Every structure is written in C-alpha cells, then in structure tokens.
Image 1 (tube, rainbow, N blue to C red):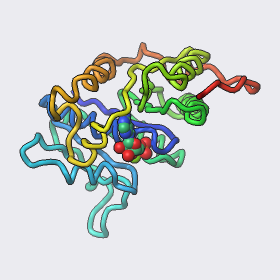
Image 2 (image 1 turned 180 degrees about the vertical axis):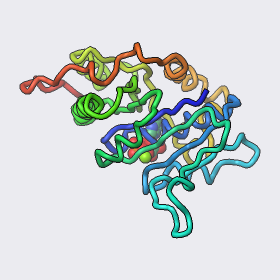
Image 3 (image 1 turned 90 degrees about the vertical axis):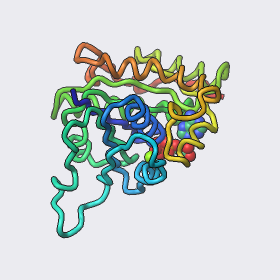
Image 4 (image 1 turned 120 degrees about the horizontal axis):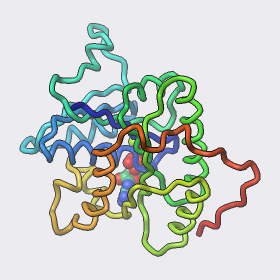
Amino acid sequence: MTKKIVVLNSKGGCGKTTLSTNLASYYAANGYPTALLDYDPQDSATRWLRQRPEDRPGIHGIAAGHSPGASVTRSFQMRIPPGTERIILDTPASLKRMDMIDILRGAAAIVIPMLPSAIDSYVTVAFIRELGSMSRTYAPAAPFAIVANRVRRNTRALSSLMEFLGRFDMQPVALLRDTQNYVHAAETGLGIHEMNRHQTRVDREQWNPLVEWLETVHSEHTPMSAVPAIEPCMPKPAFA
Ligand SMILES: Nc1ncnc2c1ncn2[C@@H]1O[C@H](COP(=O)(O)OP(=O)(O)O)[C@@H](O)[C@H]1O
Ligand SMILES: [Mg+2]
C-alpha cells in the first residue's frame, strides 16, 4: 500500500528536513520502496540524498521545489516509480495556499515538527488552526501528529511546551532529543536508523511512537478540523 506522509510547518528551522530525511531513511532501511519529494527550493533534502552512500538502499528523489526543464513536463518530473510504498514530502517554511492544498492531496498523515520555544509554539498552533480551516474548505483532513524536536529533558522549555499544547488538547506523539547524531546524519546521507546502533539507541527508541503512529493512522484520529480555536487573550507561556 502506498502511504504519502507530509512533513509540514510554516516555521523554519524546526526540523522538517531532519524528519523527512530520517523518515525516508527509516523506510528505505526497512525494505520499503521509498520516494523523497523535496518541495523546498533550498534543496536541503535533495543535497542529503546526493550524499547517500551507494551501498545503502536507494531512495527515489524528486526536486519538486523547482520547475522542470524546458523539455520535461511537470507530471513527468513528478512521476513516482511503480511499487513505491512510502512517499515522504519535505516542504519549505512558506507555502502558498494553493501549493499547500496540492501537497496535501491524498496525504495519509501530516507530521508537524516543532521546537520547544514560545515563538515556535504560537506559530505552530496558529498554523495547525490554519490547516484546519483550509481542510474544512478544500479537502478531507489528514490526521496529524506533532513531534517535539530538539528537546532537552527536565527543562522549563519542555514543560512549558507540554502545558501550552495541553491547552489545545494536543500532545506530541514523539519527543526527539537535541543531538549531534542528526547533524551527522544530515551530512552523510544517512538516518539515525542506519547509524551506529549503540550511539543512536536513545534516538531510535524516541522514534518508535512516531513510526508506530504512522503505521496505524486512519481517519478516526484527530483531524485538523477538530483543533479548537486559540483564545485571543491567552496568557503568555512561561518559557525559559
Ligand atoms: N534533534 C536535533 N538535534 C540536533 N540538531 C537538529 C535536530 N533537528 C534539527 N537539527 C538541526 O537544526 C537545523 C534545522 O533543521 P532542519 O531539519 O533543516 O529544519 P527545517 O527543515 O524545518 O528548516 C539543521 O542544522 C539540523 O541539522
Ligand atoms: Mg528544510
């Protein structure tokens, strides 16, 4: 079965490319024919794929953030090899509404990375609200999951994030720690699931709830449209 997974957040630097490339690596390493569609014209995911060692399972890459050359149609550029089972979409921070609608069409799941900071919290919840209103108008909502990224245990930033999301009846499906393992993975065309097992044990454990959720998502999970409105006079979260 083909599953399209969109990694999305209007906030830059929250981990969209990190999650996209590590998801693609996870699926490829587990034997799923995988495609990685890089909608960001900055090409970070495409560059990651170029670094990928030849002895690792291949991932079909599409630089979707660029128009095809003069001799190629968009649909030819965007073709997915037959038999592909996992399609991961990495997206840029700013997406036009029509592009977002196009990108979300047929998505099985949306993964929303966010950093534990006050700015990221407000921007991300507002973005989820916007997605909700968009999906009510244009398309059936895909289930979504928040991934708290670059988390440090026992910090005020983390407890503030959990408290903030709790106000909207949301909680992250996974918490990923801040570690150089992701920086190393980004530079070598690998994902944490393909690196030294001892060094990445904690990270692989932290990924488990996300990949389990992605395998089980179906329409009964919270769609975007179920996210309640942000109160206009909300008290500021106490971020460290
Ligand atoms: N969990 C993490 N631990 C350490 N560094 C991270 C982590 N997640 C992302 N980064 C780093 O933060 C920067 C921004 O992440 P990136 O995935 O490019 O964000 P986005 O695609 O949303 O702009 C990159 O340099 C990346 O390597
Ligand atoms: Mg990116």
